[in-house]
Image (tube, rainbow, N blue to C red; front, top):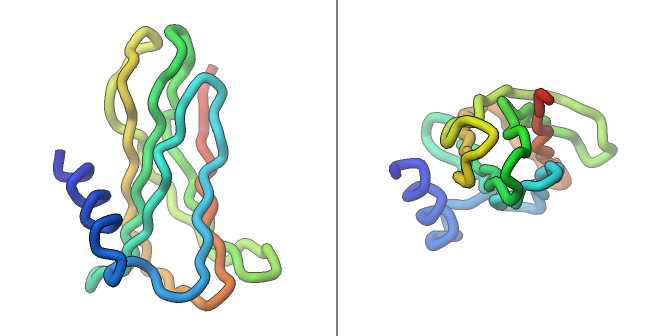
Length: 120
């Protein structure tokens, strides 16, 4: 519940969200709805959160995600890995959420991409 509350805080208080032109995208996963990733600058670094919600009964949920920071030219400059926590088992219709804290300095034009790892 705390993780969900933080996501709402980032949406409700845009002054806390990232300044500049940082784009955050999440690669799709078949049979899952993507929960839009959010990144917020905090005193302890950058907090990046998001999730995936199952839309098919027997779809394998992502086990973890790789969060990649790229510069304006598309070159990878840093990455973090986060576990996707939440409903388990292939029959669950629930959502899985991830959160990671990164000590990255963002520059204008940087991009963040979420890359899910799904084990079949």
